[in-house]
Amino acid sequence: MNKAFIREPDRTVDYCPRCGSKGESVGAETLAAHLTDEQRGKITQTANFCPSPRCEVAYFDAFERVVLAAELPRPVYPKDAAAPICACFGLTREDIERDVREGVVTRTRAAIEKAGSPAARCAQRAANGRSCVPHIQKCYMQCRQAGTD
Image (cartoon, rainbow, N blue to C red; front, side, top):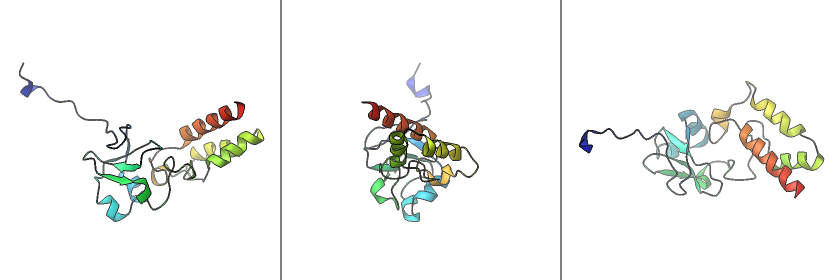
């Protein structure tokens, strides 16, 4: 069969043009909350967030146009480890480390419960437009592991 008649698969995953990480698609609502009008004009409305903490790219589109993390109006997690992991309620890595040191889960559990409530506004506040719960859980386990080594 001639290749001219074979349909190419639709591209469903975009990878960061700088680091190659699998991008997390974000909607216009997330982009509007994190980018200036000028920055939004640089990329398409169907953009991706680069989840790699070490990559300088925050958002990119299928045309490999980027907005760097350093250009964002405010720091975002995981690009800046000091930024709140939970953008809605302000939980930071330091809060989680404090829970681990004190042998409690007070702050961590409260943030996870709030993240599941109607008060959470992940699409507007989180840089990737998603719930912070997986990031909180991962950070908590990393802190516990570091505390037992």
